[in-house]
Image (cartoon, rainbow, N blue to C red; front, side):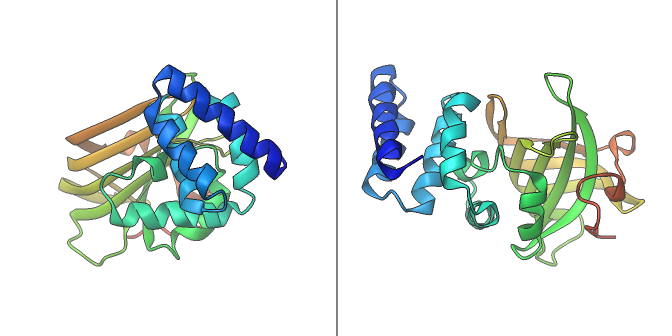
Length: 227
């Protein structure tokens, strides 16, 4: 998409969003029009679009236009998530990336893999979810800056992402390189494709043995889980 076409598209998006009362998109869209090369403004707009439940056909043109450097995009989202409990837009802006594009920046961004599990998506697709935390050297049962990245096992596309400020585990064991346990998490954010948002002050956190997946049997093969 040319810069002129992109500007026209953004203008139309802002106009339609104002008429529909989608004020997060109006604000984020106006910011991009003022600073079209700002990575943070681009991230904010995609996050805002997901927040108001705009679907893939609306998001995809901007994904294509702005995420030519997928690793750089993911790195900035992770930087923002490492320091904020409320940055839903940075979390949602990870959706649609490939896990292999994100994987290369996880460790340099300070995240350590703790566990990998499977889940079933609403469309019956199988999803693998990696649980990561900031490598801060803290208490083994107290994880801070917890990030969960879920991808479609066939396409590798991120479809379910979440972030906790912290997780306190009452039970913790390690089996086959995977942490397993149960506890409570605080300040939870979640974004899901094709739509879906969640924010919660606290909630149950659980990693069961029957959910566990060996890292070598996933698209994260080559990554090392903490033992």
